[in-house]
Picture 1: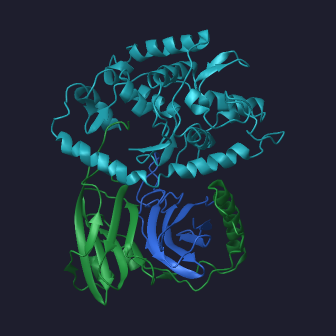
Picture 2 (picture 1 turned 90 degrees about the vertical axis):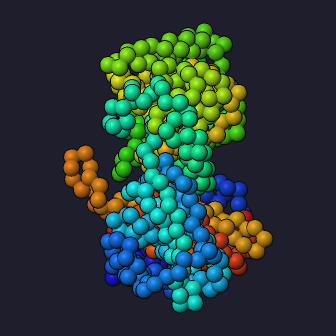
Length: 169
Length: 267
Length: 103
């Protein structure tokens, strides 16, 4: 298990932040946005925890076990949105959302991938339980959206077929 | 890709739209592409390209900001939809990539080798040219494709491109026209544009360059056509050759009036 | 060296929609290069977004997030002109922070 604190004000961190601010300003002005120019103070109080056990778990059952899921209920209030067919398994668009009150955590798992867990979100107060991202799929598989709310686990799943396309338009 | 190539000839001609997969597959792939359209990684190339355009490099520390892409020194907006075009200073027709290399040599004093280095990027070896192309083409988004063939050299480039389009050669006796001169041809699930049909030509030409999800890179028109040469078993064209520029001229003219909408996102 | 992110933050009613594009190879560590050598894993592990010191997104990722990742999410409590800051750290401890102004 590794714990990362991202915003310690060591030299590297500060340097990166300065560069980030400069680029962000440049970007913001390119977008025609107003820039107040406030400083990005060192951001602390974050400990995003990347657990090797869960990300490296092989097979859906093991991945769920590592996430601490004994059992889950399929729920109509959870949804997975993607295409029926993915033209390229390396980039499969996925949206997951949960209408269950107090959803505090969501994860996306690709059932047939060697390591099913793809990405997980801790959901702070005020943030919607709705995310869109893109994942890699080795083959046709179910995509599972796993939700934790009020200490219980819920899920929804959708099958996405992965094809090989032609020569790229 | 080798697999694709090996079944290429067999699949190319005769699988109609209502073949094994049917229209619903086509619709679902359209949906897949639509879901990806929001948040095109090509924007990251556009950002880097803008930085490179303004970055002072070379022995005399000069940026590309005075590069004349055809609409006057430094004019980026709308330049791409009028390319390829005749340039008086070199007395020839150039496409965007040839012109960029020209500016890198004449303005930034790079050697020809440096100016054309890494035309196509790969993991860990990004291409400055692809980033610059992404930036410049994006500045023509929403504008109509309007290349000129009024100058005799532009007309000549168009005619050469047309000849090349129909020129059959290579181990498979293929031409560009073999795949791209009839409606509703396809490879596997991929429909092939008929580049002699205005709508198809517009839809195709207006969506290159593109971020290719299969390669994780923004690919330029030069790259697209080089890959076509490979797929039809032609010798690999020299990067930024006049023949490829002529072919681009032919395609651009066929796409005239199409609304430019790239860098796009493709398979 | 990490390249800049592209961040857009747009206010719709009382909700801010954030879209983030990241330039990152997201190498799985399972691919081989043309010479047969395994390409070492290189992927983002954690990503966090903040607005006015408050965490609005806290994410952990694995190798199966696509190359050049895209992420979109929505939160309440942001106003026009506020900044949204996004930071990631990858498995080589490389990191990158960028920000955008809510528009």
